[in-house]
Length: 89
Image 1 (cartoon, helix red, strand yellow):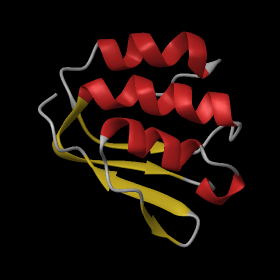
Image 2 (cartoon, rainbow, N blue to C red):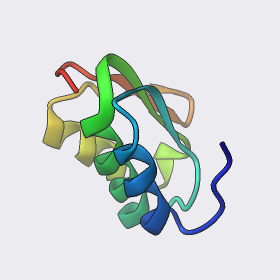
Image 3 (cartoon, helix red, strand yellow):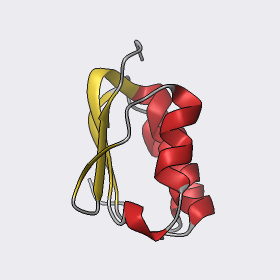
Image 4 (cartoon, rainbow, N blue to C red):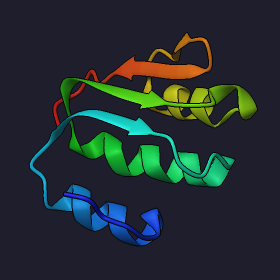
């Protein structure tokens, strides 16, 4: 299903309607605050072992800060950040 609009308004409801997600990719507004917002919204719904990805992680420290805060390894392939959820959703 396609949702169009502001992720700050839509994402909490969309993720809240799902039991869990296996993969989440952030590739929208790449500001520090917005990247952090989306990652923080996604992590509680991410399945154990699920993949969390973020594009353009080279722009600032949001990816590294988020991973450090949650004890996740801040992996990278080029500019794409990737990590696996270690906890149960």
